[in-house]
Length: 531
Image (cartoon, rainbow, N blue to C red; front, top):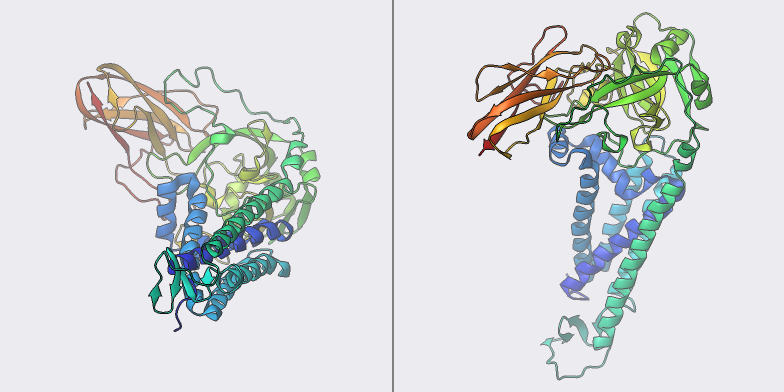
């Protein structure tokens, strides 16, 4: 292999700069072809769909609701490493650098065009970015901006002659220090262009989104409003979760690296499959129906014992039951597959949508239109079922089928086909490893068993006898409850544990079980120091 045209550090910098330009211009191009066609997002989406389930759960455990951001950052870091390698290779053999860029462009294009609902133009961001990267690679390694003297490559200290570095006092023909300045200026300008293009692309994509359409939505008043929150909710205990979770604090776990932007004007819901009367309804049709408002607690199956992937909100929507009755499920249709605009699917037992529970096609959350990240314009809410089998956001289809004939998104990845929420309880305060003053300490938290309700909550200290906590009245069995126990805390290290019993008399099991395949079990435990 030939000697490098430019020094190694410069070559690596060229590779990274070329990758930055490719990604920035691709983001700008994706404004016109769809945000999911941007190579970083498209490849990230493929990773989400194919990564082994233990790794995916690890990301949720470590990063929580920021798992998607961590994935994109991690992908960018890996790409920077590979790009540096391409730069080093191109410095010795320019054609190899072009081939490396072509390979990355092909990966991005294939990832983009294979995303759900992608059209042929989805390849353009990757192709445009790759072409720009290849041009920059030539410009900075073999073109007029390359840091090369007439006698050979340039080192960090100056030109390099054929037989080694030249002393700083030597003068060689060529471009020398001025050449290096042009090289570094070219790199700096390119990085600036890449940053402007990337941020502009994201900003324009948001402007082309549905924020204005959401702001224009006027929610209709409910024909059947939610019961009022009972007096005594939200007792004055520092650190206790609010009974109603604010929209900004509501957990978000899904597979969408870019939040889908669905215009309510063009939104349609198809109810089809094993039905006697297939239905297609518009957003206006849905809003014209009688609205029901209910408080419902949702929980993620990936929520660890004591985790925060759970929240309670006031939802406004149309009963799913009414729509299914109109469509007329046929015998054997024991599963309703909810399909999102991005192709994600969940499988809900048909029985759960027809048994009288307040399953909704929701358009409102806590008195305002659904936030875009929580499913605007329409999502599904089903009391008593984990989100992975029921809470389809950005929903566009309800397909009647059977569990024997179709596995929804998470089932082939090792999760149970049916996902009733398990009874859980959590200590919100005091926090684990906290230090407390001796005396009366309020131990408080939340407990949930949606659609069954909570019958009792108990707390114990240091494996002692269980003590009954005061359970704050809730709106219905479909929401979590707050609980408080006044602990006469004595000095020393102590272990606090909580368990809940649902309204049917079943108590949380002590045995710890991981979240896969159908939800975690075990008692939440915190250790505190009392002084």
